[in-house]
Length: 227
Length: 140
Image (cartoon, rainbow over the protein chains, first blue to last red):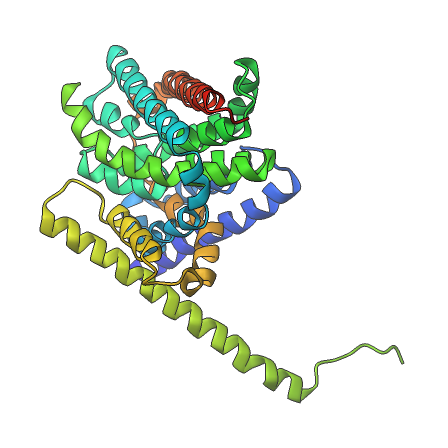
């Protein structure tokens, strides 16, 4: 029975993912993107078939086995684009640092001011860190990994839907600055969006995503005790 | 008879060892990445730093690549595959949302507003500072 439930959980997740890949190719939108659609569809199907989360946990363990190796592999785009980073070292690192600190302080201050629980404040603080790192980081800073992942996914969608429009409005036209902003704040989804704008934007965004993940990992445990 | 080329037995035989070889390389690459990941967790545990082990693994691999100890083509296949399907590996964690209490769900819109505001601040600060500094250096 337990094995059957685990297989069912894996099957539902895999089917939802396969379906989302097809949907996002036919109707590209943040709402058909694999991260959003697969999560929603899996939660809905499991809930409707009366599967409790505790019964899904084994499937979750199996499916996320490659998350660690996938994070390690993020070093490769970082290495491939290292020249771009060296050439633009000061503007890139200064922009990234200011943005990562700025967004973390803003989100924690707002969540705290609105009276959200400590778990939510901790979980939301790392919403701009790429999901595979944020999940691990959530455990270190005593946040909730599922909540954190949801905040990370929504932040990615916000960057895709709002980012290019906002950057236009405030007069940020340099491809370097746009890519850096999208990668720093909206990680993977932002990087995909930046790659649509230009090759340079995409490359700098993939660098920003990696460095922002390292930076966020160092910053969050040290900043949170002050809130 | 239409000239539909059906795979001849010899072609199939020629293809399958190639596929098997690709698979073996992929598994070897993934094992390598897995080992670096484990090493990252080990290092973090030994040094007692509050850093996720997979981040330590990523920094470690970056160092090995920069030092020329590991050539980047060694992880070419696996890194492309993992990057393409990255969402698949963390979505199951987000499924844990089904465990959430109604308080979080009812506050959902407020939390989205908080996320929008903080993302806007971050995007503007990052973009503005990077653009300003690269203009000062005379770059577009």
